[in-house]
Length: 330
Length: 201
Image 1 (cartoon, rainbow over the protein chains, first blue to last red):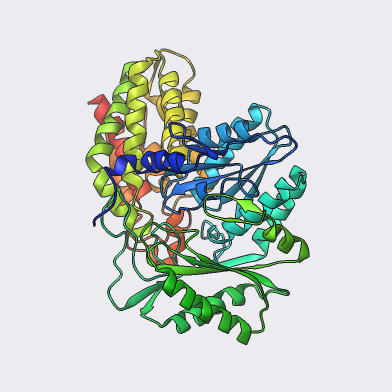
Image 2 (cartoon, rainbow over the protein chains, first blue to last red; image 1 turned 90 degrees about the vertical axis):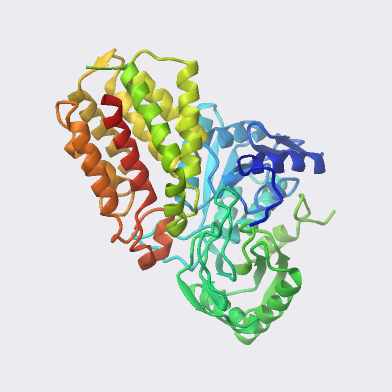
């Protein structure tokens, strides 16, 4: 496997140095692995901190900036960051109004963020935490680690970020983040396995002519394997899986997300099929975002996230945002 | 009696074993996880070795507490907090005495393993590190001879995870597809227990 890297051990630090060079509007601390809004802490504003394993770019570092995250903590590839990072980030962005941790529901992320909550509270920071768990491919039961956090993370970070930017207090920002998560569902499909820099070979074996349904974003295999399907068939399957779990009672935001190695040409074609099947099923679409946002290194494939929105959430979604990966308004 | 030097030997032995078996751990992890268990623990135990060289605490409890804190600060993932908690809780239970008996270590390790179970919310049979750690601490007795028995119990415990279906952690997403693979966490736990037996040899 050919990769555009020096050595596997330095991929995260190298990317952070490159990010610092490309984005003078961000404070990038390569040693402590933090990406922070340059103007943080912003007086009167709740701080939003997220983080997770690297390999999902632009999540989370690409979403740091006015209208979205205050800081992001990148871990090693597919490995949650360590508590010291989140505690440091919380201290850096806290204006006195408190800090919200946005945590994707994976065992490692939850444990490390929980330890960070203790560390930061010891430093006098008021903290709240919201778990993102939108992936319907995982049965949420006592016999699993619970649903994974995937595409809904973007919706939670954008919408809660807009609320924080508008001056909402910590309890309100937390409630909005929770509402967005509860209103969101996702399902993902892989057309190829992922290769991590450390391993150098694909993490699972996906024979030609087959696809993997219900995958996560860490190269973990999915729940089911089938012969290759068309874009139309995949859209029907994926949207059906999402709607079976939660039938929206109002208009939705749609994220048609690429896993990293699927060209935009294919993603837009796939979006046409997603929109068709949503129309056929009577689901009204308020806004659509197509692109590679919550990725899994070099995996080919896609995920669909639907988030039911009311007027307030839609207004917050439309509010200005200025980050490396998402920017509109102003 | 076991002094601080013994615990330093245990931890450096952990680093050597994890180094040697890193590729295997990663291979196991790629089948039912995300292919990073080996490299994560390598980084963690290298950091432990480095910090113990820099600071040399002279009590067994302090050595383990420092090592545990270092794992939490350097590993990430679930294994960082879980192994970090194992060492910190065990170290805390040993107190600040200069030497401990094997029986005291066995008792402290049982508390450490209980803390891991509580933090991770897992129990025996869930296909996790507990499936190696619990039989290991059950096999520990009043003498250092029991360390070899603990090593064997941990190895058998790790092997016994093959037919289990994972109920915790990333492997649980696979449902029945997690059956037939040895759990990487139980495997690394067996290495840590094996290192204990090596430190006494």
